[in-house]
Amino acid sequence: MAITPATLEELTRLVQAMPPHRQAMILLAAWCGLRFGEITELRRKDLDLKRGVVQVHRAVTRVDGQYVITTPKSAAGRRDVALPPHLTPTLQHHLDHHTPPGAEALLFPATGDPTRHLAPASLYKTFYRARNIAGRPDLRWHDLRHTGAVLAAHTGATLAELMNRLGHSTPQAALRYQHAINDRDTQIANALSQLATGTRLPD
Image (cartoon, rainbow, N blue to C red; front, side, top):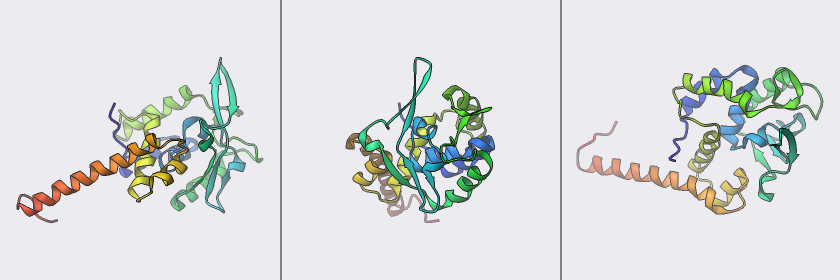
């Protein structure tokens, strides 16, 4: 299934359409490439805004109806991810207004119970509404991670850098995002030929 990353404009609309206490989840998924289970296990101690880093050292999965805290998906999944500086004000606001005190406090707990992990079904109720408002009813939650990977690839990140940022243990997955950049380069080449043949004028 082909994945169409969200544009920056769509991401902005998506964040704005989410409830205030869930907006930072979108940012961490889309700009840092974090998985759902990594985000929902994040605690206050994992977000170091002075260093500009989110520490991904654990994840949570649901087994037989119970939430189980584990290590990330692979050994490479345990990582520190640099935060794009423009996220700092929103993340600080989230800490100040939506996160209970204490180093162990969950950043994104279940609604009404700050000690319980957020269930995917609970998030999806608001996410599905927000994606419709953003004009992307096809966007899945995991596509936000894909969006983050493509954005990182657009900066010129190497394969090794993409693997490190996304927590991939093998290059195959990260290569998909570099392929997305190659596809874009083909579009640019085609546009250049249109200029050369006079079928398109410069802006």
